Length: 278
Ligand SMILES: [Fe+2]
Image 1 (tube, rainbow, N blue to C red):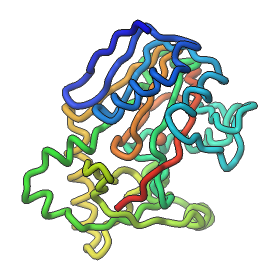
Image 2 (cartoon, protein in one colour; image 1 turned 135 degrees about the vertical axis):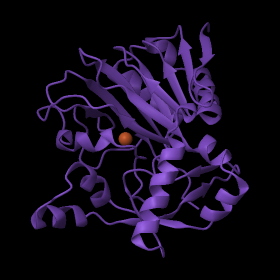
Image 3 (cartoon, rainbow, N blue to C red; image 1 turned 45 degrees about the vertical axis):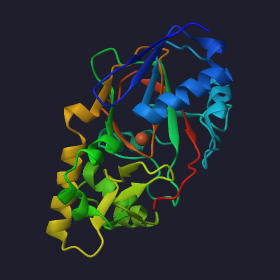
Image 4 (tube, rainbow, N blue to C red; image 1 turned 90 degrees about the horizontal axis):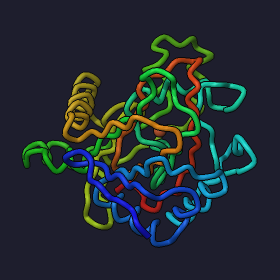
């Protein structure tokens, strides 16, 4: 199996070229991807051009694939379409929420392990890149004093916090609908079984437990700003066929804004989380 593997930014990202279609659905390729994911957080297969069936089959080689609670957007119950076109996706109306840094599944007890995204169509302008920020690397570079400051803190994550960024002034009916999604408290610093540490931050982070609002907001903002500095960030400019996997337990991510009329269409699978946040 011949392919080229290149490390991308200073801390984050690996690009693999030379494999496409069925070649990717191979346990050895999955092992290479999982190893790169562990070291670098994001793996990009350039112009992989996988079919829907192969996307699901490859995802299964990486871990347990989530069945979507609302059903899939096509014939596969595991595949969600990511687009702003409401005729193609049940969640199109929430797409603007993904323009803010976030981690998927933070209001669940066990956040997703990883996400797989492949581009079927891309915007015809420069919009819709995806950015990833590596909170393992960001945590590792904090000073001992800064680490001590956040050690043991807990954060409440809510759907409402993420929606408020998009719609800062909801009417009471809207607000009530958001609040029907249960919030979830997690440690701010997530220590994996392997000993690696990441930070659970982003748009769902509503407040730090036990801190006054102003202090809580300031610290969450400071940590997000720290984690999203250039040296921790990979920005991916999509080409049709690209397939990208990221470690959702350590990477914040966001889409650069794209318009409601954009042709951008991604297919996504999620891998079920394996470790609770502790
Ligand atoms: Fe996301």
